[in-house]
Every structure is written in structure tokens, then in C-alpha cells.
Image (cartoon, one colour):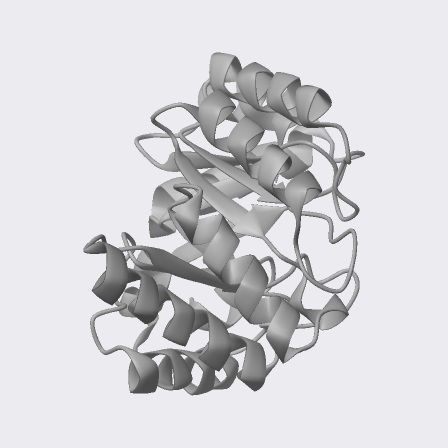
Length: 229
């Protein structure tokens, strides 16, 4: 993949609760100049950057990060706050409660989907904490709930593995075949260079060649832009 195609699917990320106005100004400058798919920040920073971005979408991380909340009402309130502040997209952690997802995860996903309304919803399943069976079960539950993207991980408890990319891509393809709707995959966690992107995107496309472009595929990274430009 060339730099431009990678920028088109990049969620340029700055997840630092202590980020200064200078840090956020620089993030917005880079985003306005290089036009990534979105800028991904904590909800508290959405109002500030929304006044400084020129047509670049805002992804807000809401409801606990890297450890997700176990309270659906709390998560829903955090998402609604982010939406009211101007977020175009929502990233949320689905914190695993056992070996396979159950009623707790289902209730959380319903709350996420309802609170995010028409916004793009990307659900993080923390693949480094899951075995293959749990990865597949979580992906299926996430996509069945109406989420737009299933996302590998936060990167704080392990990185994006080749296996996780393959499994999530297959499950997105499977969902499309069985449900007739196109869903997306977001790869994140330790992706720092174009070689990582090319390898992981190649794995995704080997499972489903239609998972391309920002509506179906995203890369979450904070340092990747330095190499691209």
C-alpha cells in the first residue's frame, strides 16, 4: 500500500488524558494537512479539536480505556456525551467477562449501539486476552449487535496479531454473507510502520478482498503518520 491509500484508512490517534492544547493543536494541524480517515481522541478532547479540524472526522474513545466499563448505563452516558460534543464515530472497549461472551456483553453492546445512534460504532474486543473461540464468538456478537466495525485491541494489553487480523476479517466476511450487510474491521495495537500495514491488510484481503477503503477498513495508530509523510 502506498502512503495515500494508508492515510485514507488511518485513524490518527492521540489517547493521552494529559494532552496539552499544544499537543492537540499539532494533531489537528497534521490531520488538516494529511487528511486521515479520522482523528481518534478521548471524549474530553472532542470539543477542543472539533473547532480546529477542517472536515476530518472525529473518533471518540468513550466508556473506559484500556479497561472497559462493566456498567452499560455508564458507557451509554459516556457515548451520548461524546456524540453531543461533536464526535462522528465512537470507539468502545467490550471488556471480556469470561471465556466466551454472554448476557453481560450483549447488554453492553445494546447500550453502545443505542447510545451511538447513527454514528459509526467501532467495538474493541481486546484480542490479546482471547483465544480463537472467544475471538470468533465476540466478533459475531459485536457484528450481530449492529456495530459497524469490530476492532482488534487497544494496544495496551498486547498488540494486533496476524491471527487476530485473519479471524476478524473472516468473521466480517461471514457476517456479510449470512446477513447481507457490509461491516468493517479495524486493526490497531503496535502498528508502527508501513510493513506492518501491508502485512496485516494483506491478511485481511486474503479472507475478503472487499474489505477495503475507510468504510470497511481502518488502521488505528499514533506513530504511523511519521513514516507515511
